[in-house]
Image (cartoon, rainbow, N blue to C red; front, side):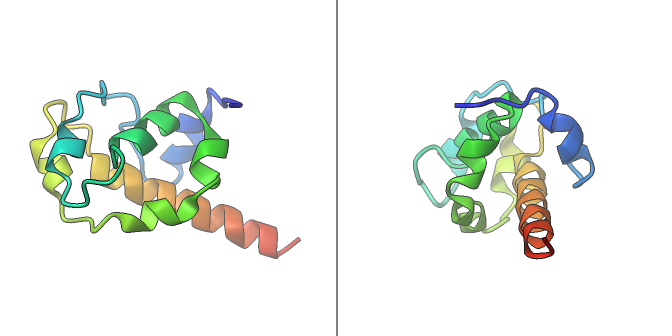
Length: 102
């Protein structure tokens, strides 16, 4: 797994201001109605690590989020996991658009 430590800086351009506030407690995964393989916890951790390959290997996973807000409402660190997921979506779409204009 390759890592890009400065990935959080890229995410800031897509509206993600709180990449590192999450301490991976799992509250978001516990409250998420999807109950799908530690969603969104896993994707938040990938963003923190800068594991772009893990995020990009299955970008459809980002669209599982219903953006219901439960994860954000219950996050003890106010890390705003729902907004991080939306920022990752914006990042993936931007990357796809750029690749189409090559």
